[in-house]
Image 1 (tube, rainbow, N blue to C red):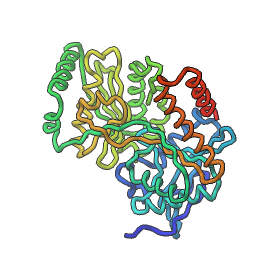
Image 2 (cartoon, rainbow, N blue to C red; image 1 turned 180 degrees about the vertical axis):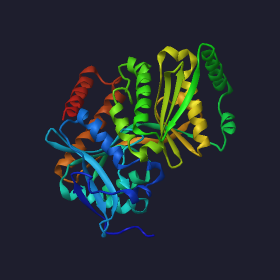
Image 3 (cartoon, rainbow, N blue to C red; image 1 turned 90 degrees about the horizontal axis):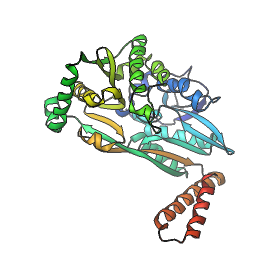
Length: 389
């Protein structure tokens, strides 16, 4: 079946009349986790905290028969007199529009043309998105072909584990010392009380609330809460998960492993399955049980389960490459924030300011040891001034 032609975009204030039932079955496999509820959960839980007073809007991408081929949910912020468009959605696995596999190119073109003609905003943020994702690449091409400038911010490297057909085969690729230490420490804990690992998937909303509460409790006692740069994924963010997991689409794709010690939850790992991918969204452990490798032991169950489920790629997310490499993870796609500037005087000026800021920053960094102090201070002052604009 050929790609639909004559796709056009329509601005919507809500999704009450929008049906994606057919479309969601045909999205690229890596993005099968996306659904209307993915955005609605974010709108109800994160948006009031991060941008109070703003409402979620949509661009519906429809063919000549008014059949939806794609959807772009977004918000628009006003800052320093500029209208800033931001793609909606939870940070990870990544942010994206929903688009039919069969019409990525035409949907991307229609989206850019709608943004260009509607004057929704002069700055468009699409991301963080996977650099190699086909939707990302099509959107990039459409913006460039319409004369928009693009400024990118690297948000980090993802790390992927390629999974074989059996767990026994997988264990051969992992350090025997790692697996031996996990087994030893788990046995030590078993001598002190009852240890069990429980897998949760496709639950009712009430059942999910109990699981999310267990995970939140673990995270509240983890190292993450003890550090200033820690970013909790579930603790005090329960509303997002409870809202999302009411949806069967999300409930079927979400798997949580919890480790219990004498019925106390002490370690968890939350993943989302999408096509042949398993995304490691969040994993934490109770600091009190750190010496028993409870954070490590949960991963062995998550990976063994993924193999049994026929998953071929375990995406462990970004950061901490040393820890992830112990499980056989190798560098995968990077997460990039794409900021596009409308091809007008305002957009071109802001883009030029950002690129100039980067240029000056590069000079300061490379030459700070060689420059005399007065010149170095002068360049730094100019850089700070540009950052305020």
